[in-house]
Length: 305
Image (cartoon, rainbow, N blue to C red):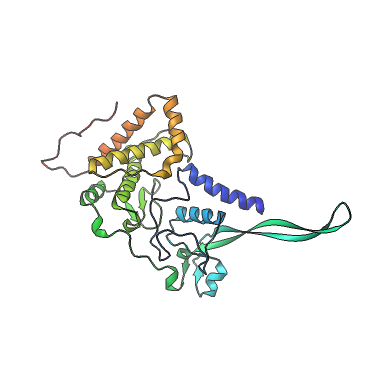
């Protein structure tokens, strides 16, 4: 059991790092009553510690949970609530020690503490129905709706990309052909929201029904996946420049730097290819805008050769 617990949690962390995401940092914060940034907490409000923080943060990121409160099946039952059928819980661990009496080489009795690690399952309050209101209450928004930028809103709306809001994670899912974004109010500023949306929309252009961009694979952690992330970062930067927005440095993608350096050192054309693909994505998105008489007939800049 101990080996399984270590392996499962370690695999969770590795999975996120291989995506280029640091599970201890996000560019937005969920709007729960517990606050814009919070440790995972138990049903009684006591914060989790150590590896349980990382494990529950990872699960919250993967599942898009905005609430930081977790409880066991029985704790929910005591509160008159119930875990929804089919929901899967998250693993947390309890570290303790068992004291045993042993006889040493001299025939003397002595006590020895034997550490152990026990795993058990908890559920996020967003997986539970019937809880008292304070477990799911929302925090006042950090951004006001009037801080939205009209030109950026019009640009992304014109793409026709299917966009869903909610949770605490931003990602594009090719199988659903859908972009998932946290609520606008959850971001630290409007620029962070649109820069993140630009990144995910660049990914959206690579769908087989659009630019059919295939850089050699999609497995997390692969060189090809790292290059797709580079294309998305460059595409987002290009779009931010076009829209007059300040580009946002997403530190979550820092782990890709080593992959990018490796590619650039081994292939002098790699950055040209990435820039070309990013420009094609930006041009494609601009091409979806409704044309007016004032619009230029050609893009302002050509894709890299």
